[in-house]
Amino acid sequence: MTRIIISRRFRSFEKLFVCEICTGGILRNGICVDDSRARFYPYFTYQCDQECWTIRYNESIEIFDDEFNNGNLVSDLPVADVLLYTNEDILVFVDQLSLSFDAYQYYRRLKDIVDNNGNFDAPPPSAVVGNIINPNDGDEIILGRFTATSTSTASIFIDRTNILEESGGSCTQH
Image: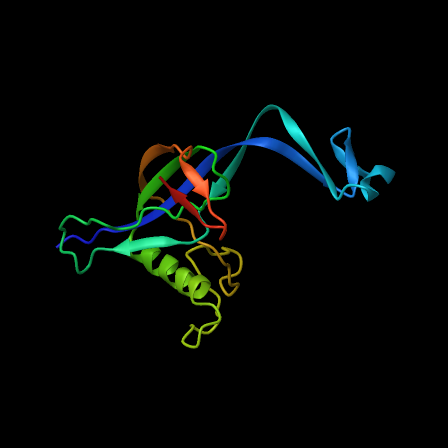
């Protein structure tokens, strides 16, 4: 039986229309500076004078081990949790990485520390030591891991023009 261990990451691109917000001041030469007019207005917004984008990355570690799947097709597995910051259209690139078992164990420990922080059954805080060493000092603990993987990438354009904001702050798509 061949085990397939994958990790997923994504990055999203959202077009910006407001590129700078100055609280308590105005924009001069690319810097927010104090200004007496700011006492009448809490902030000033400045539209972009050229195309400007926000690039966001996933905020959690997503890994999957098919140990109990026996090589069968996996369906209904979440690919990315793309949060709704605005109702502007968004372009999302999703990368799927094939990991070695050692890399999987490293990222699984890291995920447990990050995701289970503060819970009753949370793992005790500890250094997640990877495979990087100091050749001059074998006793030095170095945090981090060097990993080479094969990667598959897919992209999707999400049209958000039909998303309506409701009074509760949540959004729905119609």
